[in-house]
Image (cartoon, rainbow, N blue to C red):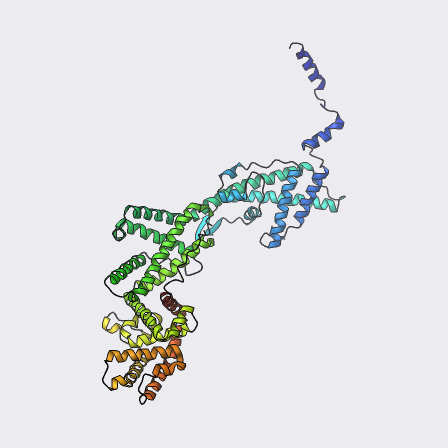
Length: 564
């Protein structure tokens, strides 16, 4: 070993200050390693020229790159791809991007590895530098550090743009403009990559945090739904469970969460946040009353409408709970802008519609009673006039001309029972709603009162024109029933059914009675139009409820596959 020491020292003394390789091999070797600061290889020159040309094609407006238009976005995307290709051609190491392993699954799909992966939306965020964004009606702020890194990226971007402009000028005017050196290209690209990675890291991390906060509305609803599940598993007696204070509290909290979700996500309807859990409690109570009534021997027809409307309230809530249970398994798929989640919006639309009807009808006994009576009468009318049954089955347009006539006739025949229903659609005809029950059902509008008086006059004529009445062989109740059948056939079948409708009358008394009835029909059309047009939204809701009850509620309750 001692023999090699002098030799090594001698060799080092001999080579100190001199090149280890002949001068003719220095440039190729440095170029091979990518260390040459002055000279670009042919392939590197092509790459830089390509990125410079791509830079020229960027759509710039007001000193900023336009990424909003389709052409601007595509040009920017092509430039960023060319930029990445140039960095690879010059053999530049990418800035570390190990932070991406902490991204959520959605962002890991966008940034699957540690490659540069320059994205237009990241550049766009650094250009716009919005310190505040609004999600679901809530204000979120980016940190000052994120804004500082955005500014740093924009400075690097500007330096790159200046350098590429010089490159293009040098190609066009080689004598007057010097081409950027390799070292300058290298340093500028490295600086841009470092500031890009720095901004991307901070920006995406803060976006993830904002998105988690935005999804918190869904998470809170899931937590309360889970608590309800636990209480329901521990208590099998549903009626006793609904009386438990703890259960009612959790139910109220869940409904409050759903109402909040509805206000920010349900863009297809009103987005109401004032629907309360009392709607659900009253609906469940109504269903219990329906069950008790049917067990006591009362006909199911009497409770049909009430059962359908109350069941709709309960089932829309159950569907919302089912959605929350399903979405808990894939929360990462929930768009933080909640209105973009098709499945959530669909469930909220159904929930709001059902609970809005429940608030208006199920929670008001007089109104619900009027709807139940009306549905039962229309079902009986279908037997008198089969054409009506076909209209209901087909949802024919003619049905929506017949329905307001039957509603008005039923009000005229039973004003005490149907005042609340008519008041809900024509409130201006009941200006002085009294707290006194005796006064509340009185017809106070002069025109409406005159219309009711004409109905009573026509009914007397039709009663008197019945042969059985003339012989004294029938009761007033039976005679009024015949009058109702005559008028129902007339409003359903029109003038073409006059013979069938009025054929039961005495031939000698029929002309006068029929003429008076036709005059009543003429007035009925005027009121029918007012019923439909005074407040179309209220009329559409009322008619939709009647159709839903007449068709057994089959239109709404259809199972659908789960969608976020």
